[in-house]
Structure formats: structure tokens, C-alpha cells
Image (cartoon, rainbow, N blue to C red):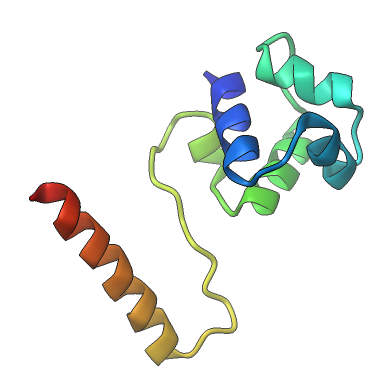
Length: 95
């Protein structure tokens, strides 16, 4: 559910609810309500959350379980290096 996704993203970025609320310019209670599935964010806020965590809105809405990494500004060589790291991680998990 949406609340679980937000909470997992928040904790994986080592943020508490107050810190996330400050970064998104909302109240701590709003973040708490999202995480408890009491309310959903507006479309504008959904986009802001997606941008902040570098995920797609579809990921937040559980329409797509793929996350993405923003490689804007990286050279092709740097992007290839990141892809190789990802491939190495996937190879290890399959063994």
C-alpha cells in the first residue's frame, strides 16, 4: 500500500517523519497520515514525492515495481559503471 511505500522510502533515506515533512513543505501529521493510509497526497504532491525519492509515480502507486536512478549529468562511462554495479548485485542475488 501507498503508506508502506512512503515509509520504506523515508526510512531507507534515514529520514524521520518530521524531516520528510520539512523537505516536502507539509506537516508531520500529513506524512503520518500518508504512512497510515488515512489520506493520499494530491497529484501535485505525488509528483513532488516521486521527484524527491527519484522514483516514478507508478512506483508510488504500485502500478510498476521498477525504481529508477537519475543519471542526469553523468558521462556515458559513469552510467556504464553504475549499470555494471547493478548487474553485479543482481548476479550475486541469483547465486
